[in-house]
Length: 320
Ligand SMILES: Cc1cc2nc3c(=O)[nH]c(=O)nc-3n(C[C@H](O)[C@H](O)[C@H](O)COP(=O)(O)OP(=O)(O)OC[C@H]3O[C@@H](n4cnc5c(N)ncnc54)[C@H](O)[C@@H]3O)c2cc1C
Image (cartoon, rainbow, N blue to C red; front, side, top):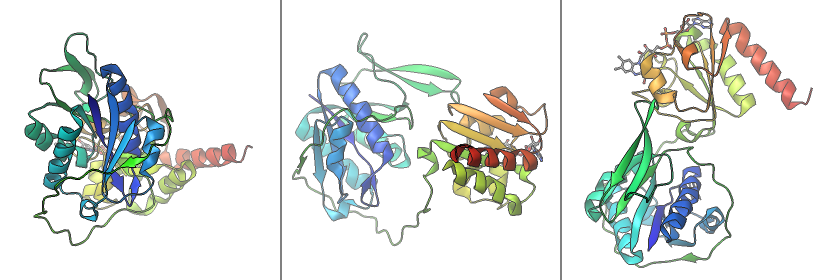
């Protein structure tokens, strides 16, 4: 019996989401009395470190053709590894990659699937697992009745800890189908942690008045080591790039800290940020709905509050 964790990589390194999935996979494996196997597809380096986060075995199929993600090709290869390892539970990250694999894999394996799980399954009454629903306002319990199951793990649900040791990387012979997709170019945002993986996020909305004022938000984000985000209208009118837009129709995030300046807190915005652990809202309108969802609220003009906050962070970091 095995729990198979598909460990995502990017730029030849394992992603933080992969460490979370392996750490979670080990907990699931312990609960099932199974071994936790991490699977890496492509030529990433340093994958033996997945053992540190709980993988009992690490399998890497390092064919360079797998460096480029192709949902159909990856589904076929993961399916073959599931068969070879007799894995009952497959764990993926709740990322765009994981989401695109979830349906295909569960169809291929005739497995039940649950997306965005947040907790270790319970086995008391069959296989049940929790996920948050209604924009984080409720938690639903899903029962899976099939022998095999495929889960995607919601980001930042578990903080990966070093609970194991490095393991030797194994190789496995599989048949790699020819991809029908030819990728001509990949453009990635460089520099900051991508929003779905970010632990600290500084976000701003229409209260900024214009794109020329974003310097104060970027400075605060730089001091905190945070990723920047924005409300939808701000991206729609071109003040900020679309990949920064969070909410119901944008990226759903789950950072430890979400600072929102000049954002009203419409339900569609909250849908994507409600799962943040701590929410700080800066708004000059005491009636702004966002204050109801905030852990800390600062009533004031963001053009005064944000620079003061940045100064306070600088002083704190300097030990003053
Ligand atoms: C189908 C649908 C999907 C949507 N999806 C999303 C989504 O995914 N994400 C999203 O964000 N929105 C989404 N929206 C839009 C959403 O309904 C709101 O219109 C939007 O979130 C408002 O953006 P905002 O808070 O930046 O702007 P506003 O609503 O204009 O709010 C600006 C806020 O800034 C405050 N402010 C102004 N000046 C200052 C100042 N100097 N100092 C401090 N505070 C100040 C104001 O008091 C106000 O609260 C969606 C809407 C629909 C219909």
